[in-house]
View 1 (tube, rainbow, N blue to C red):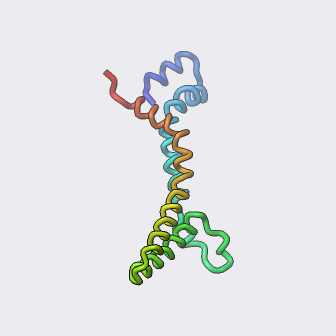
View 2 (tube, one colour):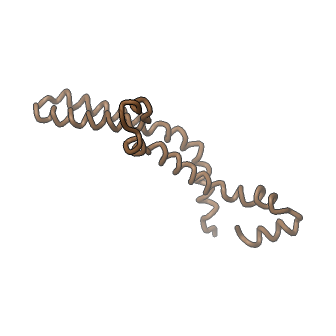
View 3 (cartoon, one colour):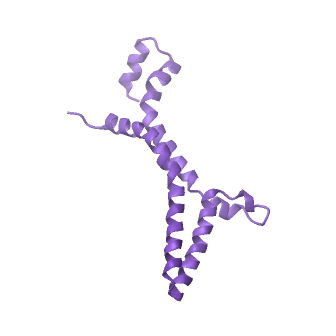
Amino acid sequence: MRKELRESAELDGAGTVRIYTSIVFPLAKPILACIAIFAAVFQWNAWTDDLYFISGSAGANLHCLQFQLYRKISTLSVKDTAAALSGSATSASSTTTIRMAMTMITVLPIICVYPFMQRYFVKGIMLGAVKG
C-alpha cells in the first residue's frame, strides 16, 4: 500500500481496521481473486494426492473425480494401443471420443467459475497499468 494513502486515511481519522477494510482490502481484491482461482485450479487438478495416499480396497470409494478420470484415461490408452495394433479404427475413435468428453468434464467447473472472477483480473490489470 502506498504511504500516501495510509497517511491521508490517518489524517481523516481512520483507524487501522478502517484503513484495511476501506483501502487495503479493495486494492488487494484482484490479487486475492487471482490467488483464489489458482488455488481452486490446483486443488481441482490434484489427483496425485489420491494416487499416493489412498490405497487398498477400502479406499476405492474415496477417490476424487480427477483420479477416476486419470484411471479411465489410462485404461483407454491401453485399449487404444491394442486397437491400433489390431487395425480396428472404430475402437480408436470411440476411445478418443470418451477421452475428449472426460476432458470437458475436467475443464467445465473452471470455465464456470472464471467469468465471475474475470472482472477482478481486468481490474487488477487496469489498476497496475501505466496511464498517460
